Image 1 (cartoon, one colour):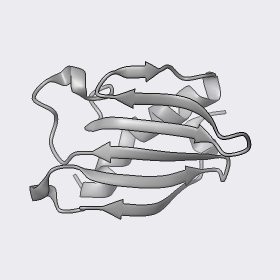
Image 2 (image 1 turned 135 degrees about the horizontal axis):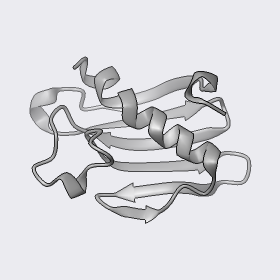
Image 3 (image 1 turned 60 degrees about the vertical axis):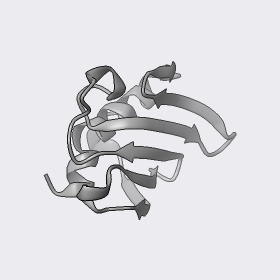
Image 4 (image 1 turned 120 degrees about the vertical axis):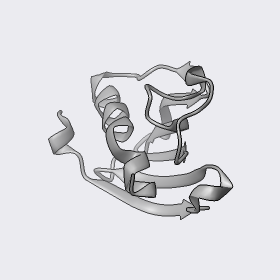
Length: 104
């Protein structure tokens, strides 16, 4: 699987105003995985609180078929990517979720 094989669907964005802090984003990838992410318009003051320089401070990914948590980052890595497919999804979200939400 590559990032070109991924179909992103955003189902909800809360607090999309860049002036109020982070926005919670919920979505699905290929109708197989769901995710919740806390995304910010600006980078974190402490880079350890941000996933790979992505402006994502929290990211949870669940496989929908069995409800297994496949990845969790909460201002630090809690559950590493369960497999290569999940890591591709993490990398994909890191590459552009903040830009999608905040347009920058």
